[in-house]
Length: 302
Ligand SMILES: [Zn+2]
Image 1: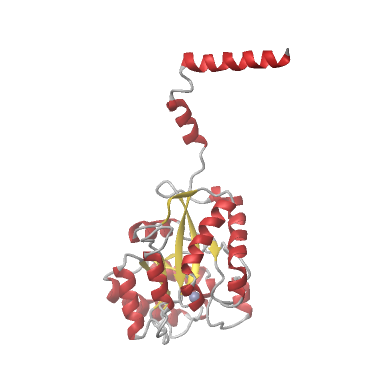
Image 2: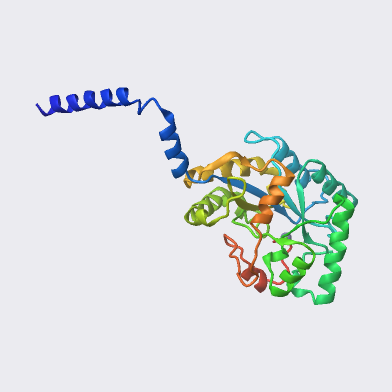
């Protein structure tokens, strides 16, 4: 008897949908979905410490090639925070050639350092910092025809003084949401844990993703790699897959396309994610934090 009653109610329900057109008319359903659907994230790739001046298998070249041609999204555009004065990179002829190529291929260049090494700006006195910023900005103008608008502080170290110096030069300070931690511990740690490490960070991001600003209908999520790292260079395609898989596993909704595809949009999104209050110390995800950068005076990469 109970089964008969259930069948009757099912028939009655189907008849109601047929009469009212509730199931056939997609508009009420569509409106409902658009209100409740989460704002998708778009992955904003950034690369620090390059360009590499390595002969042979050059990691900056491998990364440019990987972003241009890959199975997930050909033509990905990123921000490269370069070291224009690096004696083993940006200051060499190959380094300058690669920065020009990076621009020609539609990526954005940001400021990282202009010193021969990788010195924290917080350790430079006012005069030296000013000179270094001016020198680096001039190098960018020579390369790109205009000054950069983005800065990634070396060792993630900043304070009110260096923040003010950046602002005077029109530089927006961009930290990161996800970090591959491929700078300090390039191998074998990154090799063994790269997937679990980034997947963990995606799960952490999931908890506060709704706090991120919406830019052009998506929430930009900043991801940081180091293009001077040969391991990153030879694994860039795998890293792209790990990021997409990690977002799905964490329950994050990826935009279509999942990565940025123009210098203008990637730069605008990065500017929207820039730090506005230097008294806020942004925590860098993963093992390597700015605190450790303070303890260990001059690691080769950050
Ligand atoms: Zn760095």
